[in-house]
Image 1: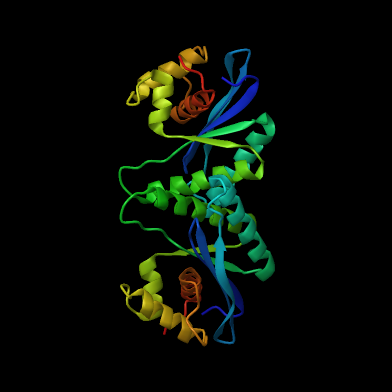
Image 2: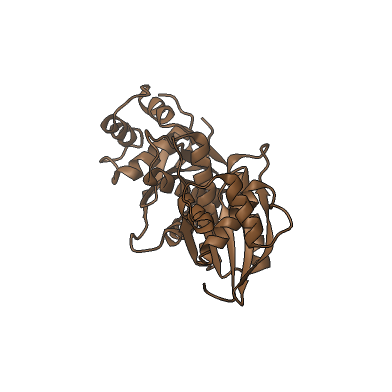
Length: 160
Length: 160
């Protein structure tokens, strides 16, 4: 595990994009911040993407992560929703590139395997592992934020 | 047809993104510029999205369009390619929003219908209509640029 590094995990979404920032230091992983970027359903398509870009830029500026970890998208079927999530993911990758922050990408199975040693782990098992690994008193809410923390933890490269 | 307006059409793509800028004035539609933004396959995923954003920003600065017209994505099946194209489309929408340029979106069928009165027109018929409508000596090349011009023409709202 690389030490003394801040990693910001992103769970891509259009209406809700989860984020979770962790700090790896002295062999410990500490949660610094987590939450969701929510876009207004009343806004136009491109205005919502702009809101995501602005909020992510602000997060990068606040936390100054040295690494961005983001989940790869897999959808069982093509849909309007899938396309929108991919567009939002493109915006997140762009903002990272504009800020000069390296990006690592993981499949959902890689994240599950890193956290539970089981590439097919369920949502509840994953969330418990995030809580336990980060010594949080409760499971992080909302789910998108917990997922983003799981992605950031995966990027620490720690095996457990 | 709205008069005295510059419209920049975009045919979304990750490796190649077509663009075509037209000027509507006095009931005529004049092509100002068309071509493709090409990203380097040697570059990282996010660096390629950054290149798209930078090249599009430069085009918007150069041509100062009052409207951006972009095609909606439909893919027969979910694929890595489809996701990448959607990511690039998200970047294009973001750059338009950042530049304060309104965006209109059309389905492929809408573009085909606007140009040929046939929502299922073939590629060759479409390209001939772009050439004839813009009084170009030859069919615009490459195909992505011709497609982008077709999208811009659709946005003029002209029926023919």
